[in-house]
Image 1 (cartoon, rainbow, N blue to C red):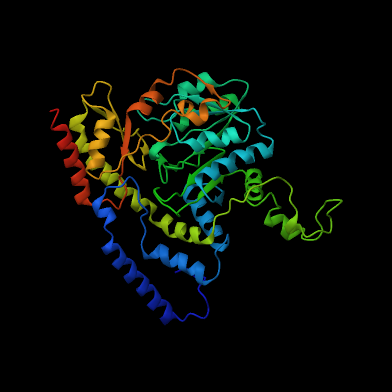
Image 2: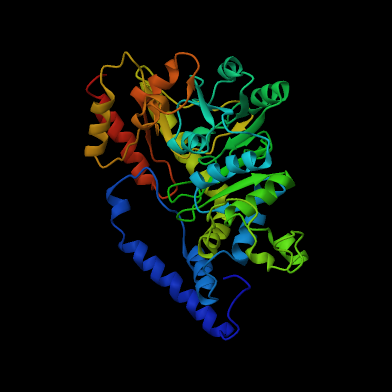
Length: 432
């Protein structure tokens, strides 16, 4: 438990509480049958440490945004390698807040184009549209399934303001090429790292390359706070705007401390600065309970990712014999792919369809998912929105029609890994 314990709790009582929570959690886990019966695509991986951190917040009556949010922000910023981090209520909100900050700063204006991969999740594109910006969909690389820098280059016009790469499934995008394009054309870079906790290029963690970056702590991600997200930046101007936008558009704590009753405004000069709103904002705050989970989770991130990589290694070795039918994930040199899930592509000339394989796996209690939104401009909710498409999006549409992913999270047991491998072997026994 953290150092913010209630003074009324003795060390003896606290130790007894910790032991009781540990025992109850272990008993509950032993009785858990769902994970034993199904190989899920994602699962919250935590133990008594997260429960005790959250309980500490409840005992201290700190359930809204408070000291643990600040501690989580500081720890996450240090891990990613940025000066600032702003915790929010979801990764989708993080994208909305980051783009809002760029507009509020004056560095973007409504109607500006934002270049994004066509194959990605809905809330990469939807905040762009909601804010009056224009998504420009470009194709992804056929090997990494990340935004293709060659296609970005074709899409840049005098209306372009932002390049928004997404590190899909924890696979780092080609940031060197993307940053070269951004510098050449004086463009901003917003990294969506929502599935890429701990992924790296060389010794740099993704999220430390762009002007802004975002993370999600959704329950199925590499680390989780149930819901939650974060925005990262090295830019103090953006940081101050993010803090204000996150909380209704009010003044930042720094300004309030210095000008509580003497804020420089001719109408409100003697007004309590805590209730002065300088812009239209949101309520996107993270709770201290969520941050308590995040503090414990962040300490485990590297170890959790190692377990994911070990599972992926077994999948890769076993499925390599079926490369005639599958395109398996590739990891570029000098990168660390943190594998939110294990994705693969069924080749066009395979002797089976995606629904046939998916149905077989699901019947065997192995969960599957397609590649998120597939090709977003083809989705009903996005077709009629203001947007631009560059190129034929051949790879994105191939992913839309043929991609599948399964789970590789640390709660999957060795027996389950072997079961997954055997199930694929049983399926392919019909074709080999």
